Image (cartoon, rainbow, N blue to C red; front, side, top):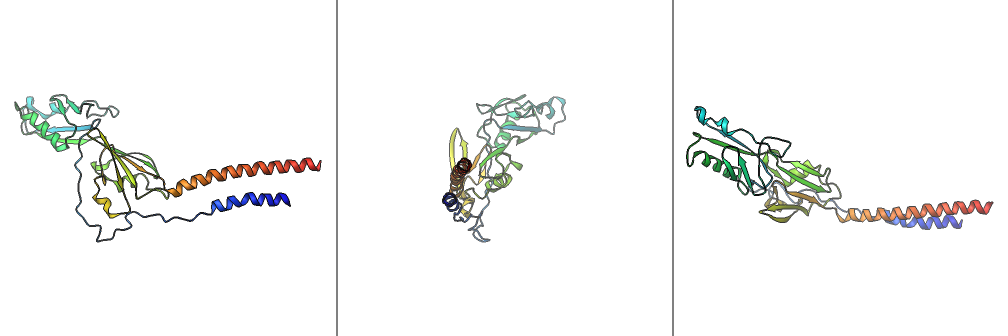
Length: 258
């Protein structure tokens, strides 16, 4: 009888630890309705960074063999598994197989296309009526933390906002903070951290709403998750102690009977 009471006393802490109040889980954009969410859509023009892999296609109306555009479209080998493209090196340059070294870091796709077109026409016209198309080949962001699936995400269509990134990562789970999502970004060699509140309409006004290549998105755990982890550890310790006490009591009964 005394042993039964002792076991009941050990079980009480387990009961009180398991009884915790449920916290309200905020929804995405919970304070937005069909009128307050209206605003101008801002399209971010991505700037080229180091280690970007670029596709540069050059076209011309020229029919002269010595001025054919095919001469300017011979691919070089990039870093992505030998895929054709032009890799932006640590100095921010690409090396075109016909036009030489071109500084690309910090330029938009259109600005780089204009620079390539300029080289095709000055100081001597080497290609008549050139058209230049520049595309990113390895755009990605990385999402870590309390989401369905952590890891890198390829950017579809060279445009990705924070909600699309979270959705591609499987969404924020019940223990993730939606109101303090971190975006870590490197710009001109400087690292900056932005905070996004995915429950507020103000998220659309943030410069971090639209992501750029190589952004790191971190979804931290709520205090509820941290508390649960602590409670789990405590319960594991109590359960372990409870098992030892039970085993000792059982052995004691055996020896007493003998």
